[in-house]
Length: 388
Image 1 (cartoon, rainbow, N blue to C red):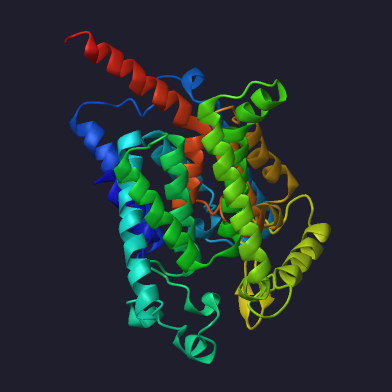
Image 2: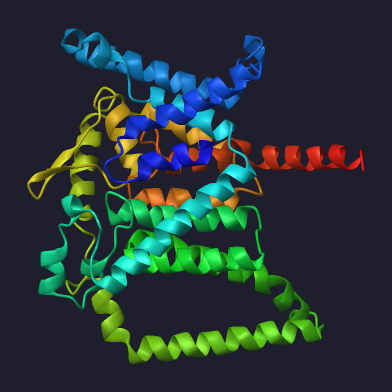
């Protein structure tokens, strides 16, 4: 139930405030069990990361008060960053079982995406079916055919497939059933055609290859060749040759797909980033008074498509520094690549620091709780085995 409630707000037509329901579920469940461990026993036992998040919330409230003053009602005075506390609380109560369930729920959406793509529709929800004209105009562009799955847009679906894949790798889940899940998630990434996800997926592929082949390369340099390494070397050579041939033969087609036939295309990000930088240069210290900031773009209001520019524009440099402190003080050997990938994604999308989102929650899990929860689960297994 907890996992389903966590992923529910990522579906189309479900409002973001539904993230309150998994929090209510956890509090109710633990209270009925007489477990009040989610309440700190004393101030000195409060997690330092939680204190930093509380500082962000208080600083945001003060920033709003001094910036907007009498214009604020009581409800408007409450900063949206208070949702970050809920994201922290939900991440704290995640475990491997919950995350596996989330992966399988994402896999189901991946199957939906595959069906949508081959049926030639971008969504099964008529209220969201706004790509059909583009599909008929230029059906050869995969960008115009990208599927939405069960989500409001393809970007949300794409990042879910990517974090699903990261979760599988974080827990090193390698059974055949998880191999099938990976195939579906990769297909989901491909058919939602999000270029930022392509970028971070490519970075992760390079990292995985480096991790796999670095000991083999070291052995070769030391003139030590093991038979088991030969198959990996042959696979690498064949793969490189295959990708080289495909890239040369289909170069024009690949470039046309990636650039949508428009040459270098950042979906207007260049102009958006320039507008945000101009605003930040004039409001370096306090940003927009901790009120969400947008710029006009193509007849609509656009966010920064960059989490860090967005935070700086909204809150100013001091609160941005608190967010960066949260990341830097919690990076470790186990979560490094996962944190880097989500940060890179968030340099080209408004990924983390919405206040609350599924990506925020999973990011907080990797950043704050993943390693400790895994060690806790291992300790519990040791205790249980003593009774056998």
